[in-house]
Every structure is written in C-alpha cells, then in structure tokens.
Amino acid sequence: MTKGLKDGEPNGRDIYPDIIDHPHWQSPTRPHMSLYDRAAQFSPFDALTGYSDMISEEQRLTEKKIELSETALEKLNQKFKLIDDMLRNGRKPVISITYFEPDLLKDGGRYETITGQIARIDVVGRKILLSLPGAQGRQREIRISDITDVHGESVEWLEPGWP
Image (cartoon, rainbow, N blue to C red; front, side):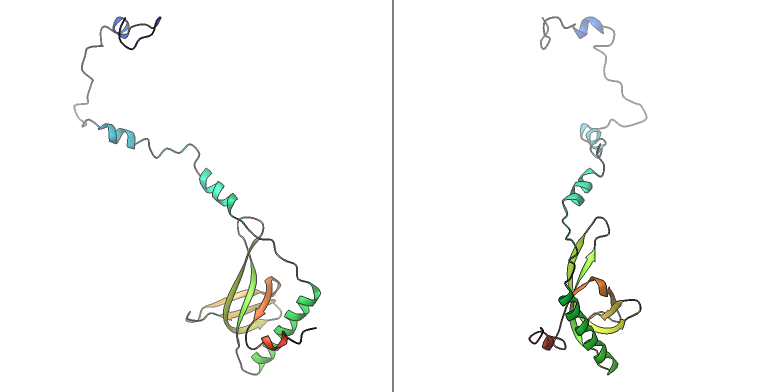
C-alpha cells in the first residue's frame, strides 16, 4: 500500500500514469509566483464585507433625549431672557450650554457641553448662535429645544434663589 492512502482509496499513480512524473508547467512569458504572493492575492477576501462595521455601530451606545419638567423649562427661559437683555445692552456673555446632539445613524444621541460667547439668540428660528473661543469667526448653532442647561457667571446668580 502506498504511503498516505487508506484502504479502498485509489492510487494516483494508477489513475494518472501519463502525467504523474512530468514537471509542473510554467508559463514561458510570466515569472513563477511565490507561495507567499499566491497566498497574498486571496487574503483581502472578506465574505462578510461591512459586517464588522455593522457590529461596531450596533454596539455604539446612544442616550435618549430627556424631556424637561415645567420648572426646568421656566428656569431656562429666565436664563435666556437674562442673556437676551445682556445682548440688547451690548454685552456678549460667555456661557456653557449643555445640549442634546441627535445621532445621525440611529435613534437617540448624546449630551454635549460647549462653552463660548453668545453671538445672537434667534427667537423666530428658535436657536442660539455661539461664537467659539480660539476659532476665528467660527460659530455654532444650537436649537433651543435641544438645550437642557445653561451655565456661566452671568446667569449663575439665578440658581440660589430659584423657587
């Protein structure tokens, strides 16, 4: 019995005697490819293209938007009125705004806090324009409905005496 064959298996030398001892054919015009290069041409194959990205996206956590109570909304409204009065008097206070940033790919989002100088409050468009420090002329637009808190020296005095 030939080495490596199990009982009942045909012997290759018996089946292919006309080609078994011939040298491996090589192209006369192309160089022989190494085993490393041969393996490399198949390595980028990914049967589940995008699957790992989909799993990573699914694992990414988002938060739900918090609905503010009437008291919290009234408190925010008072702070916005105070800031608007400062803007009308020519002052541009520096404040920190905590707001909800909706996620573009899935339900929910995340809460972010940004600090800058109030440039304008757009009552009709219901948004605030914030000039960012160190960013020459760059402004950030934040919808008032996404804001959950406002902090800063100019509005902190409202906190202790709040009902």
